[in-house]
Length: 296
Image (cartoon, rainbow, N blue to C red):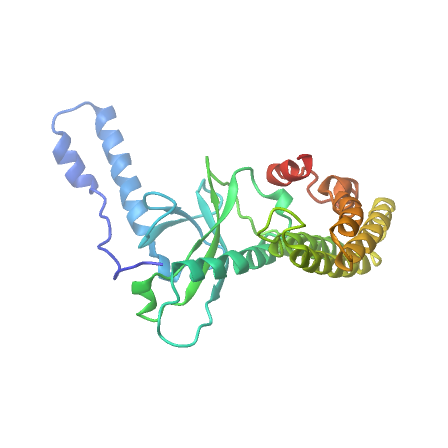
């Protein structure tokens, strides 16, 4: 969010001033100047404070995508743009003291994926290069009562075209599948221990396994209400995976954990769900970051 009171609005050069400035030039130069002035005036008219962003807004940042921001240019979603607000929430903290940049970022890191999935549930269908960002309060804006976080998908290269709002167009069985599948991977990554090896934090990895097993049980139950040959095959695979994650969660030592963990992890490889996704009419290209994890 803006750190200081809103800055002065940028003002585009007016068409009259543009014409006076170019003097005696050819018609094409005059036309270009008028078009440029119109574009500038349109950009100014579209400015909105980052305090008033709403879910669904498509925008272009003024300057770099990252860093302090006072305002953005709101544009129609069918016009090329750099970002779209896909969720928002208020930080619930007692007291007036600012919790600090790290804690605010940690809260946004945890909540924004959840909020974004409500708006765009199928992360496989996101445009290439779209990454999750967020506008958060700063120490200065916090002191004025700012507690809002705006979660956005931002193009790390190029532009976005069209709205990312796909939740409303999904069929019930698609929503059921995505809700369950997203919860499984959220349980996996949200509970990832900091230690790289299982031996260094067996308890942490067992806790992760328990969370994944629980999410898989719920996902498998949801898949039971969806018809389809490939969905049925996936359900069988994930049932086996849930059992192995449960064994890992109850492992007596690191060796026993590995025995269960290896097949458990393999059976939730996203590539195993491609056929079921195709049957359900969902996106079937594994995102590059997920494909890289499982390829390693």
